[in-house]
Length: 260
Ligand code: NAP
Image 1 (cartoon, helix red, strand yellow):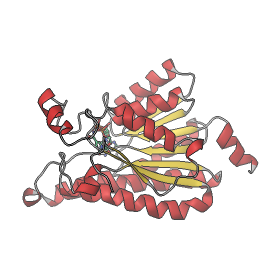
Image 2 (cartoon, protein in one colour):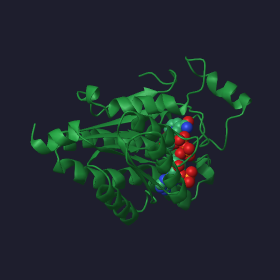
Image 3 (cartoon, rainbow, N blue to C red):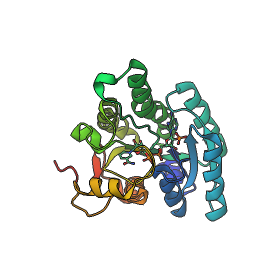
Image 4 (spheres, protein in one colour):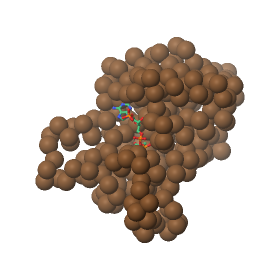
């Protein structure tokens, strides 16, 4: 191991988490869990004040550094500026969790081009823009862990809430993950995806009602809807050292909704 790589594996290092500003979301749960495990945290979210609030919650609860910055993941220039800022303020960037995303319940025959592009630009291009910039930092110290959130909708063509552009973008995330596992593997970087099933956040049109929970649970083998912590735990594992022999994979965290 080179000195530079050793410092990133064993010393102070940072995990970048996108989409962590939402109070009940998967991103915030992930940022808090990673901070509890000793990671310094860089938050990137379209909601600047929300990002700063989660960062300050982290610094006051855990003995790590955290910084929250505002950026729209679908805007490459904003992403690059935001990651520059995180890199300048925090220890080396060693992990990335691509979590920011939007839902889209519009039926295909009512879909506008604007809606198609909004969803693809955020859920697929956004993952590419953030990953591309962070990977430039990771290759410098020959080490990195990247996890991107896909969805069971990629595998089942929707069926839970969001429809076609969401399925397409999330399927694209799986393709991107496999291609990057090949291209970035030689630089000591693992790249994986997680495909969550229904998780109790507000992305499916607001808080889940008891009736909606019951309806969603009917399709599951585990007798409950998932919680953000279920996904956060899987992300933390794939960003950890014990996962170092796993790359190019999609891990379903879906209560048994999809088996292949
Ligand atoms: P969430 O609470 O709505 O979190 C999404 C976060 O992404 C929010 O903080 C949101 O900010 C942010 N965001 C949205 N557009 C953005 C943009 N253009 N640039 C930067 N940040 C942006 O929903 P969640 O359920 O935790 O979703 C997290 C991820 O899991 C998403 O990729 C979602 O597709 C995926 N997922 C969720 C489920 C589920 O059942 N919950 C299932 C499968 C996959 P604002 O709140 O300000 O918009």
